[in-house]
Length: 265
Figure 1 (cartoon, one colour):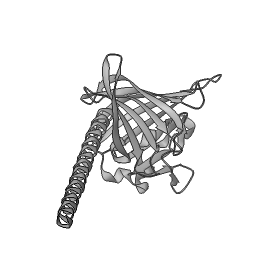
Figure 2 (cartoon, rainbow, N blue to C red; figure 1 turned 180 degrees about the vertical axis):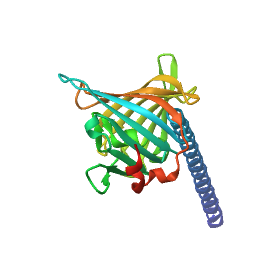
Figure 3 (cartoon, one colour; figure 1 turned 135 degrees about the horizontal axis):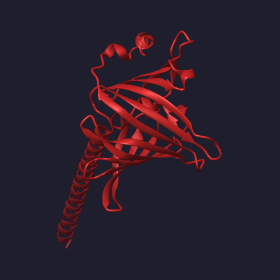
Figure 4 (cartoon, rainbow, N blue to C red; figure 1 turned 30 degrees about the vertical axis):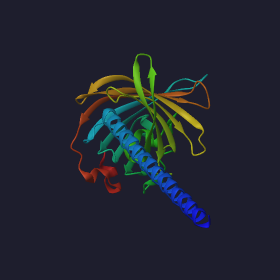
């Protein structure tokens, strides 16, 4: 009897060991599949954002004129005009064209470092991308439009709006130097056209929304030529950005240096 009890105990121990091993193996497989799925989702999300970036602006050097009209409840419209020189989505120069009283002011962006040159100040002044440029437009909205490099993207879901299907992505800032800490971004599935964006603060407060409209062919691709940015905190306040006169340009690296700013016109 004692021998049978020992043998029975041994069988139970073996079965318990096999069960534990099987459970551990299953958990490991599921974890591996989860990692693989997450990696695949991130790769797909990054590809979507990169394609949408290429729709918005050329990867090559280019010049574009931007008119910004800001309106608020009970106030007249304010119009400001800028000329943007950009190269590779990492370096850009933004020149004030109007109002005439501010002509000569220039923003210089290298990677995510931003300075402003003012004619009556001897040295450029460091700025942040998140600081307000005019109306609902931050410095980074005009000086840097590189979502792929500034954010870690995640594909949240697909959503149907009207007769079109859209990817809905969550973009999380790579660090605190980016223009917005979090962005929800709608991109049309069939052609990667940007459709809508919601911009959030570090405390996850909705700051403003943006709609991408009026797609026209500029330098070989249909691109959004009108952006409507609306204040999410104060109703009735919005800035409309109109893009025009885009042309590709061979822009030497020396243009994007602090020493060269005084030579730009």
